[in-house]
Image 1 (cartoon, helix red, strand yellow):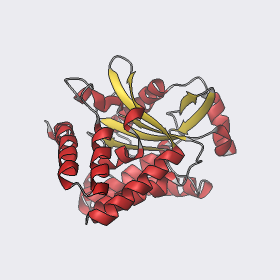
Image 2 (tube, rainbow, N blue to C red; image 1 turned 90 degrees about the vertical axis):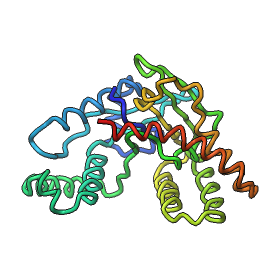
Image 3 (tube, one colour; image 1 turned 120 degrees about the vertical axis):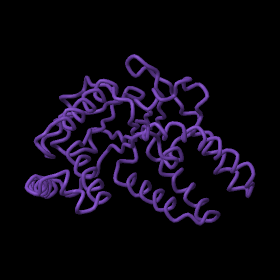
Image 4 (cartoon, rainbow, N blue to C red; image 1 turned 180 degrees about the vertical axis):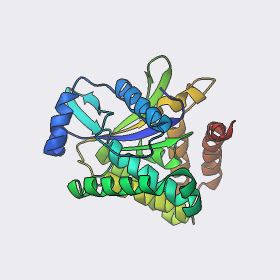
Length: 269
């Protein structure tokens, strides 16, 4: 498992997925989260080492599966769509002249054609997985509750996850957004929260949401026992709701100090 990514995943009942996806899910009923993540990250690493240029093809990473109270919930890895979204974000951040240095024009043209064809066949598709590197966005912790904190064996090391019902995550993000809109003049943060709220609306409310530290847990060299990031964020939000700026500031500074260390690994040579 590579050490630098964390994930936000949505799991839905089988009946909420399309016919094609349902067939694929049934082939993956024996999958589990750590095993599927190893396959996904190996696929990503192979693509990064490949010299043939960017391309999209069938989803090789498989399906994430969780079981709750005897019921199974499924999260397609959605690698083609996620790959395209990541590439377009990279291209936007690089600018035209830098893009030309990294990708031949004909290679990008092939990606455009391939993705457009895929998008026409899947016009309503929304990725079930979001990921970031070298950290976890503060907004993700608004979706989960501190008591949902769950350490687990990620295959050779301890990691951490939170699992919550989609309907609860929707309620929490709307509540947090309401607080922030009243007390903070930070447009980027509100936009990020609105984006999360809109994303969650695309999925079955009977599903589950998982915030997975995955490999980023390895960056906590002293272990995860002292990491209670969801508690820090909820304390800050509760204090803001009461108008207690001192408590809100202290809680957020604790959160920020912890993750500043993790974020710094991105710049380590």
